[in-house]
Length: 486
Image (cartoon, rainbow, N blue to C red):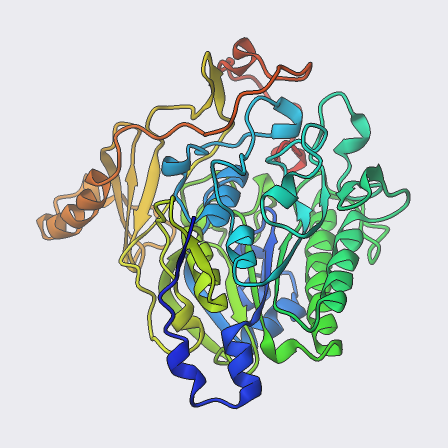
């Protein structure tokens, strides 16, 4: 069931022209999410040794956020933004590579995605890039059941199917109407982008919700069509960042060519911080952490919103938001219905985007989840009963351990790299700060939910309980930045 969103936008319509009114009522939304890239590789956020002119242009002509949280890793981030619910509520608190490991999957009967929500308001919906939380061999039309009209996605690394490992050159892609196949001699990111431009061309006269979870810049590190001779790991990574920016430019250019730019809200962000040893620097300083880290470098991501005439140009904000806010924000922008059966954790920041508010409604934001989930006799579950998490406001941040106890407090204003744990000192004046965060922690269940999905017959590649047990740590022979496991 869906429920009507309380829409403030109606109060705006009366003072706008008919063309602007329609744009406000049903703006197109293009949501771009890059894989494994932090602020340390986006030049408008102060990144050194890189230029991202197309992304920078979005920031110059739009609204740039400084306090936007993803989750630390792939699956928790993606499920959070799809559902508007925190991982502790959905159960997807750790990464789970469905095509490779089987067993669990993102169940359309248990969770309502933002695509389904937007379809309730008459939006045409499309996705291209990376999904990885369903196995298309088991359910070829999973994306349709999740609310997408059309799709063109890398299948994820399907166990026992080696060609499926490729998301870049010779990409193995699952497309609506044609199924899964290798695109010989093609660069996957071009295939995904071409598909979205074609979709926008076909649907230019109706409201569209376009989701572009890029395959870039996740490993394996590769050369790109624009830089075919790069060879070192760092140069390949830079080339992949450059190509990410190139694709953003292509999409925005297509909107201009289609003459729908002024009624299309473009959002640019990333799913978590930069992977492994590939972290860059911002004004000479390396981020406090990267992918899978609870430090700001792992979860506080670039986040830019742009729409000429609707979103104020050249603006910046310290407003708090996290990925649970995306579904309700999309819904309010599109006058859509919200799922009645789901308890949403997110809160819409549409008024902030449209210049009708100076701040978001959030007093705090949260992130949690890294590492692979595990199995027990009942199926997929989180690594722990209670997942360690971080909570912050505009100045302070706490780390909460697996016993639901605050074990670190940082002053991000004076210590942005989180080097000085204030709990180690004698700061009685911080007691109100800790008390505020403790109230947030106390309202969360002491045990995380389990992922919900319907059981199915076992498949040959299903992960076994014995395979899911933690193994002794050993020296890695494969660098983290080359790992394509999620």
